[in-house]
Amino acid sequence: MAHQVRKIGTTRRSVSGIYAFRGETPIQFESTLERDFIKRKEFSLCVLDVIPQPCQLPFKGLDGRNYIYTPDFLVYHRLGNVEYCDYPHPVLVEVKPEKEWRKHWREWLPKWKAAWRYAKEQGWVFHIQDESRIRDQALQNIMFLERYKRMQFSAEESRWLIENIRQMGSAQFDFIIARHFMGLYRAEGIAHVWHLLATRQLDCDITRPLNDATRLWVPTDE
Image (tube, rainbow, N blue to C red; front, side, top):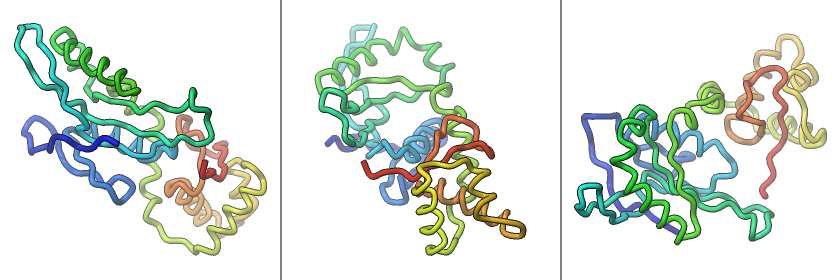
């Protein structure tokens, strides 16, 4: 498995820092867009790990000089039960604001070609992601859920609620609330269900708006 090859220093041009991936692994980022990319990957149960600054690639620039390019991230996915031919390839990722890559794409094309070739050699794929792929409905939902993530609820009640949803296979948010949290308990029940989703004890289609019609289910370990 790849590991970080370059440490990120402080910069005046953007916001850099360290994000605790799933509360454990420190991942460095160089911009708020990179931070938001990490948040999206953290929420996805399909993502196994995110490696920052995973490799250094030599390439020749348009001026004929030699340079070293370090892509931003390498994303590993859980294999699950898929056949070998269908397994999710690791993804080498460059995160860039749309305004920047549109302005500099000719200048940056040689290093991106180098990344594409290297990824292909490793059995990976290479992607460039900007705001349109990162700051979408899914990220809005993840940011909404953050307020519920650190709330505390009875572990026994959580297990009971999860088991009821597991037995149903899946259920709409409003049905869960109406069935299990009546009257004075409704507000607490709403927070409890969002907490279970925020802490990944429940799952949903995070690409769609979260509302009363959101369908929830218990994720599997596969």
